[in-house]
Length: 226
Image 1: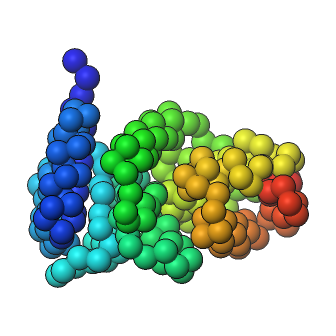
Image 2: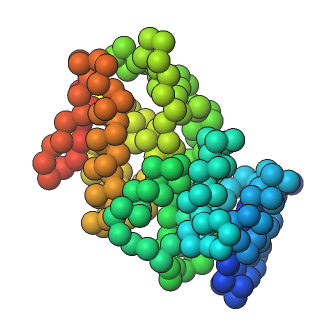
């Protein structure tokens, strides 16, 4: 019998929360619904869910604050943000604090279910991956750790997966549209700007080895050269 996957859903709008809960439970997920950030954190501590779906704008504790607290305890649990915000800085903030994906309201239940399943599959692949060497660095993909000599950096989920795909396509162009759809779920303007920010972050974290470069191939994508 397949394992029942428990999901924590934090949504302060009662009708929407109930619709999402019922929709996910028809797909055999077990959903714990919280109406604010504080209640969501208490549920998280008590059940240790496999995935979090967090509304950004909530009373008592917003989704970003809640995610930051949870990330201090668990660096790998998948987090999907639900947001009415669509500004680039909001999207980037969500990913920077450790969000794995986001959905802009209004959204379809089918899209949410697809993104949940994709994230769970991606986490399974990550957990089975090996430690990778890149130049003078060691990249522990399962733990999202990048080590250079005695210094170890904790990467966000998005940084880790972007670096993983760059390494797997080392010295080849990583198609911009393909990776945006794979990791961001969309290749629109906001997703593209968000990816550019994460490329800049990775360049800074790899700067200790001058033989490693992430090159922007205009009109096509990025290439990691080592």
